[in-house]
Image 1 (cartoon, rainbow, N blue to C red):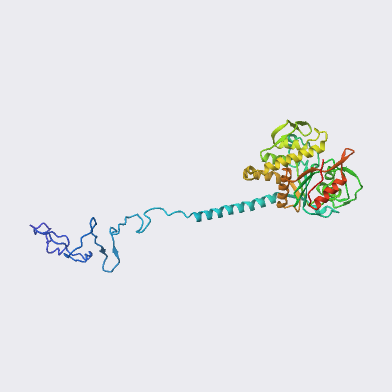
Image 2 (tube, rainbow, N blue to C red):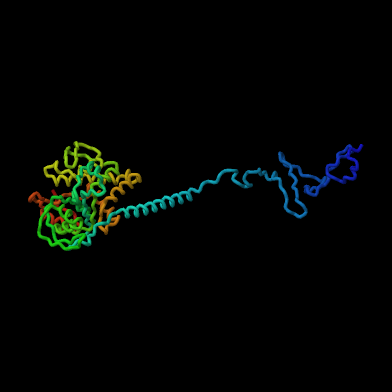
Length: 419
C-alpha cells in the first residue's frame, strides 16, 4: 500500500537519505559527501577506540568552494566558554607587583612635588615685603652668618573693637615695639639676644622711610622702642646697627592679632609657669603649674611687665620661654603632617608677618628652625648685657656688647653672658 500523496511515489522521490525500506533488512546508509569516513572507508575495517575512550566523531566539510570546515570541539575536549587549549585552566594571572609598586611610587612623588610647589607659591604670595633696608644709611660691614631682627609690635591692624577689648590691647594710635630680638645663625650654632624695649640708645642720623629726607642726629638718648615709633622699621634697624655695630641682614615683624591667631591655630601652647601672677594692664591671670595657653592668654603672658620687679628683663625671659614652647608645638608631627593644622597655622602667621624686601621663604624657614633650636636648648639664648640704668632706661654694658658683636661677626661661639 502506498501512503504517499497522489502523484508521488518512492521511485519519483529519487535516492534520498532516510528513505524507508519494505525489506526485512534495514537499508544501508546512503553515502553523504559531507561526511568524511575513516580511512577504512564504507564497510572497511575500523580501529577500535582505546579502552574507555570515545569513538572519533566525523568532521563535516563545507561546500565545494572550500570555505573551511566545522569541528564540533569534542575531539579536543574543549568546553564552550572555557580557556583555550593549553590555557591556565581558568585561574587569573598573578599581579605584577613590581609594576604596581613602580606606578604607586611615581604617583606619590608626583603628588608630593605638585603639593610642595603649590604650597611654596601660595606661602610666598602671602608675605608682606614692606620693609626696604636699602633706605638705611651708614650701615656697618657684614660678617659671617646671618643676622635677623625679630620684632613683635603692638600693631592693631585688622582688629575689631571687640578683638582689642578681648586681647587687652587698648586703642592707641600708631605702632610700638613690645618685643625685639637679634637672631644670629651660622656654622657655630645660633644665638638669640633679647633687646629690652627700655634699653637706653642714641638715635642717629637717618633718612626718612617715606619722605627720603635726611635727619641729622642730635645725640639724643631715648628708649629703644621710640625709634620704631618715630619712623618705623627702617629707623629701628638703623638705631640697632648704630648702637651695636652689627649689620642686620633681615627683618621680620608680627603684630598682636597675628601672634594670637598662630597660637589658636595650633590648638594652644602647653607650658609650665613657675610662679603665678596677675597684671590688669595685659589681662594676665595665671596660676603656677602646667597649663595650655590660648591666643588671648599667650599674648597676655608675653606682654606682662607690671607684675615683676625687674619688669622689662623678666618679660624678655618670659618671651623666650614662650617662643620655645610655641616653636616646639608648631614643629611637632601632629602639626606638620596634618594639613588641617599646618595650613591654618602658616596662614595665620603669614597673613600678619611683615618682612624686608629681600626675605625669601628659605630665609624665613632658616629663621624659624634656628629660633626653635635655640629656644629648645640647642644654641645660646640671652638678654643684652646690662651694666645699670639711667632715667629709667637700661644701659648696656659696652665692653660686653663689643665682645659679643665681635664674636657674632666672626661666627664664633658666644662667651658673653647676659642678664
